[in-house]
Length: 367
Image 1 (cartoon, rainbow, N blue to C red):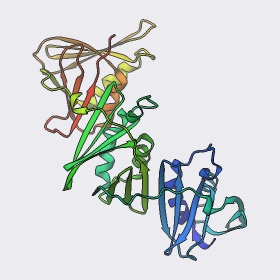
Image 2 (image 1 turned 120 degrees about the vertical axis):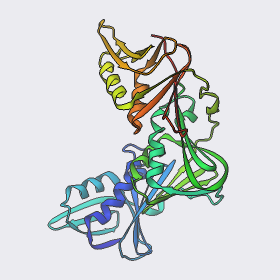
Image 3 (image 1 turned 90 degrees about the vertical axis):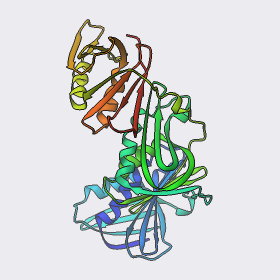
Image 4 (image 1 turned 180 degrees about the vertical axis):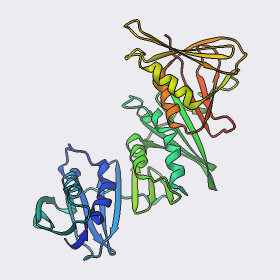
């Protein structure tokens, strides 16, 4: 493989787009590498962890059919350390890749491209829809923090995507809280559900831009494919049955209160400083025209915040994990949030007033 007089960023940008999924330690050494391929007047850079594969390309004229694999992290670190305006000459062959920039020269070990494992995208396309990148990015942000981490119920370690008629819904839960968000999309689609792995969701959150540029989502049986800008991401889906989230979302909670999101978030952040580090409990005490936030810890320290609210209903004293409240409020962007409570043993519902496209359910805890 030979690349003559190329700009540093022409190689660094596609490399940076894919290298996030490369693990440092692998049973297969080649998985620490990226695959570089020259075809159709572009350089294609591919990384995989056997569950997900990302390919990004950059327009770089060269001889078609050239391919090699090289260590992802080392090449990326080298390119980042070079000046922004550096011009590179790359020459690969006989187990080595030589990168020259000015008076600098680096020799990197390579492995044959023929040994590189690839995920082949399925041909049984079930659904395909297109939407602005910023909309999909915002949808994920409202939900992804509620995904479980290393739960024995493996289907919770990811996000449920539901395509249904003219909507795309995202749901995540760790068994203690549940976040649901919905987005209108162009088209009329048959209902389809897939569970995206946690790593796929987090990687998409990094790659998607806050722009109107389109992203195409293809559901391919046991895989999903996202295509946007110069990136293609193919991921296996989690094989499992996601819980019926509609049964978890409470209806008819009579104790409702609306609060300024930023004010409430700041009060919770201050109170959290004196919460119990292990249990992270907070008492929410609702009374006529006031809401108190109370945190205590094992050192007998206490924080109490009092907020004015328009409330005339029955008093309520309920406990929550304060982290679960902070996560939701931090990822919303609206000015006002609405809390709906039942009793001290019922889950609370957080929504956005005037909108029905977001619901966050948080279970109570004993304090």
